[in-house]
Length: 261
Image: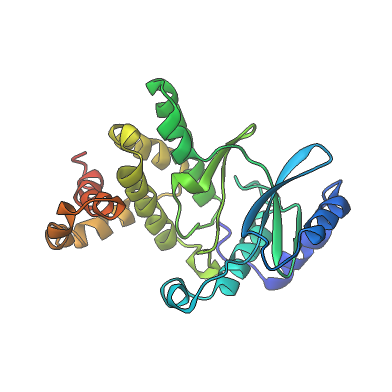
């Protein structure tokens, strides 16, 4: 397991990793699009290939209080790619970077969109199994995402890749951090992808076959300790919108990890 690494190792990996063939053209493209109105996430095309530019989020004071510093979140994501690129981890390779931007290759549609739009049940089922297996492999490599969700996983030509590491912290690359990942992933599927919800028990078995020993047990223990919370959220389940979907997902989540789903 790669739970602990020296800081100089990250630098060595980035210095020895071969640069993207058209890296200079990508950086030139990014610099040409700098400005106060530049979007946080932007798709561009360079030499016939699609890339995504990601910049720090711009927040007003109210959202800063809720979400924290966007600069810190940006640096967490940069650290994640520095840590993971160079290992065989299911994440995209960082193509270019600067103090206020990251560039990643286009990795295809996100899984939440695919779950919603795919009409063939067998294909949705296969995608969920692949997502669960990918999360297990990611954890087996010794990493933790921080907030995994199908909307942060994309189906590329090479398979499912994980994205959006703004909650990444090296200190969470532990079994405990991975168990928390698993609970969050399952919660997001239950709340926002109802047409694959019925396959989650099978997906958890697929995850367990690829993941480190102990993650499922820790996830189950946490859910057992928190079962009292399902009674607190009952009034909120009567409201409408996404928030009610999330409150309604909580009892189903506990049942899943109790083996009742």
